[in-house]
Length: 89
Image 1 (cartoon, rainbow, N blue to C red):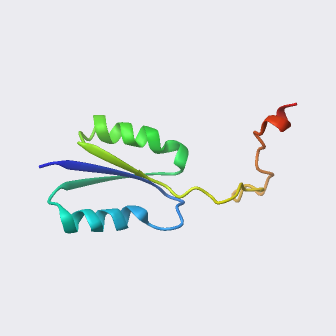
Image 2: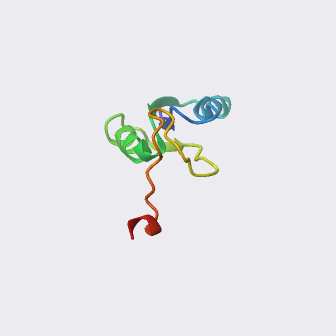
């Protein structure tokens, strides 16, 4: 049986993985392996693990980037680090 890996993020605004799993199950008879990571920067590693360790045939990486940059870090209430080129000067 073919195996589809779905990598998604914890802090996405909607549960895109659940929607993808539902759509796939309606159309195909495959095994689905879900791997959830904290943020979008962790998706490449999750996809690699799904391909190599879980032996998935294909992987979908799902995330929902913020529409605008954050100005504060929600957990620490400290200013969000500025990594823009102007900040480095």
